[in-house]
Length: 280
Image (cartoon, rainbow, N blue to C red):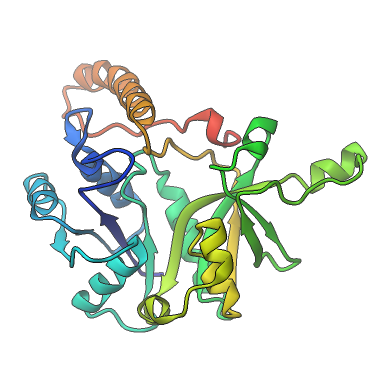
């Protein structure tokens, strides 16, 4: 199964300006994201940037990148433009890997793409994992998702869903553990280009979750429920510091092993942050 990874990148991010170029282990964050995505089964990985400085940084590290319009309000619109420029066919699968996920697990990218390829009734697929910490369930910055019997998304919310009105037996509670949504999406290229033309949903405006526009218009999103932990997403200065610590620790483990073998040292595979989900 062939698919393409597109990585939207914006220089003037709101919460952490210029984070796409923030140094993590000696390379810009956007380059590290592309390197992780390149370890997936993707036929091609391309960064879709809003600024020539990002394109230049990618090019300097051997990462394919293109300049897209600066007016796009979200990453979906940006990669829709990129899919046009690349001339992708309507049925080709595009995986949107967020540019602030430097520790993204390549296997999750593969799983997300494979699920969409299997589900002809769906226009998109995404990923979720079980929530084990109550603090995560209560955190509005962590998006929850509930599914139907076939694994289609019923709703995404920052609220606590599903809400246990009554105390459930332990076995039932285990079977219905809440799910944390991971911001990784696969689209068919034809729908990706159509998505920006859909009218906005009132629910999307309330929750500030653009995937609700898809459900509002009656389309289906398949959800891969993963046992893999999710790496650190970089939204704040604290997140960036944590990502740097994880990369430094992984590099420290890799260097002695490679030196002993007399080999070159590549960018290390980073272990997922155990706080972001269950271990594999």
